Image (tube, rainbow, N blue to C red):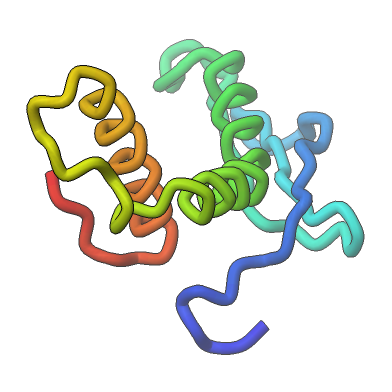
Length: 120
C-alpha cells in the first residue's frame, strides 16, 4: 500500500466472528481474505446503559463494509457499460428518466468511494 488516498485494500473482505472480552463490548473484524489483514472493525457496547445501537446493527454494518470492494467493482462495471456521457439527452423521455437516475446514482457512489466531490 502506498500513500495515495485511493490505495484501497484489495478485496475480497470477510466479516470475522465477533470477539468477546473487550471492556463492555464486542468487536467485529473485517479482514482481507488472502492476508487476514484487518481492514476495519465495528464495535458494540454490551452494557445496556452504554448501548448506542443493537448488536445486530453492528453485524449489518460489518457486512456492508465487507461488501464494499464488490459493490465498487459492480458500480464501475455498470458505468463502463452505461457511461454517463452516453445517457439520453432528452429530459422528457419516459424510459430515460429511470436510466438517468440509476447512472447518476452509480456515478455518485463511485466518486464518493474515490473521495471526489459528490453533488447533493
